[in-house]
Image (tube, rainbow, N blue to C red; front, side, top):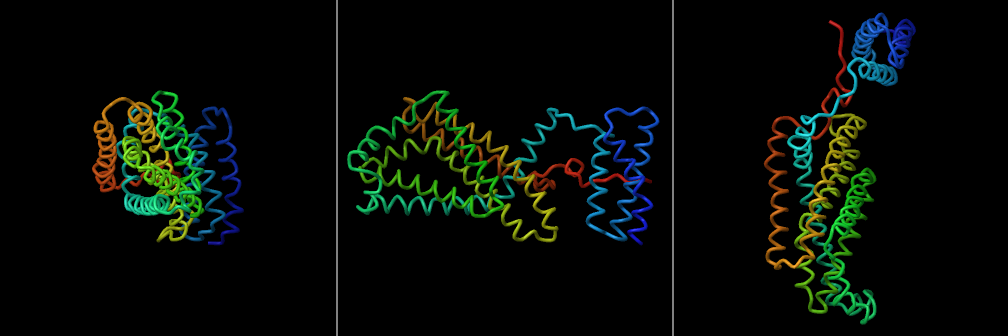
Length: 329
């Protein structure tokens, strides 16, 4: 195929299709013309892809066809079936696919946090960095416990803060460095607080206040970090796909994770706002934390395995992602 000659001959058709797709209103004749031109251009795209796959021409025709298809079919109207599909298929499959990344991030976080806590608890020099003796006592005996004041306002504040951290990990994942920095900083912060409490004989209080909500809350942050790092690794090693397509597919799937984590963090925020600082017995509080964490992983493993086995990845359907193009015939 002589691509230049073919393009010159077919450009008026492509331009006419694009012009019709951009119009706000079409009469009956124009609507029929739009359908005919759409089918003809889809066939042109198929011919170009098979005989002379020029990236610029393929991209140009794909954009024109996506716009025309949207005009023909309209936008996808949200429905309860979309919500059910997201909760039962897309989200668990996306979470399941990064489960081992989540385990790795969890192990690294716990290693850094524990090492930091031991250092602060056993090294006078490291402990001195946590403030003056008076400031340390004030934190250990008052500030740490008072932070967990029960109520809706506190739950909302916690939810917003943690959702921001999760979004940061996913949104900057392509850099590779940013999620590692965010996770490392949080691991050092949690470990330092635990080490300070331990050095004053209050490690039990630290664990009792962290466990009810922290089991699910920290897991959500680990998942966000895993999603960000998975996106970075896709950029490094896209596999058999082109790098652009691999990043697009994984990026949409991991955006699904980011949306799902909003709900997960809302649950942990409710636990932190109404359980952690409540007057319930400590065994009950910790049990609540264990139950919500177990529910999360049951959701990921049971529904996620089933969804992945059925071919779901967390990405959009092919037609919504723009990969399916109708052809004539």
